[in-house]
Image (cartoon, rainbow, N blue to C red; front, side):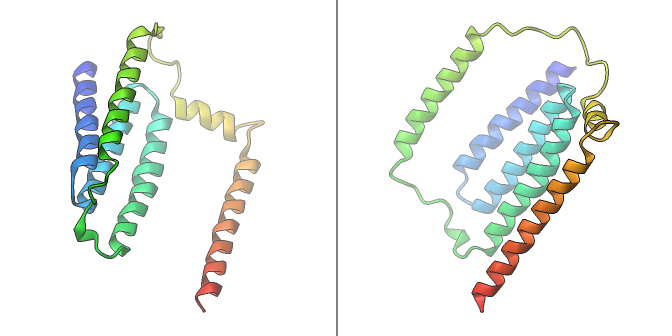
Length: 163
């Protein structure tokens, strides 16, 4: 059953990645990119990496995709789509070279297999290590405050430049 779900998700990821490249409508390409991010999170769930799946959903689907969609909505002349560039042929050649390199690496690497499912979920383990006894709760909160301060400072600087 896991094999079937894996192959379905893998096909969705590959088709969505191709659609992002080939679609002329930028907004639809961004929506297909969101689908690809969700399918990658599904692969993480199959690998029992629930923490990575949650981060994938929160960061990529939640933040990056919304940023891309808002950027597209605020951009003029979105209806023109992606211009066909003069570097299309070199990009295709480099892409094919990297694909061959990736396939060669996958085929020629000995992949050690794990002996079953991890004893505890990764999110629980990471949560205990980060926020449990002797964890890093203070450091995480300080970084959050630092990032908030940087964002507010950037907003103030941009606001002053507009006047």
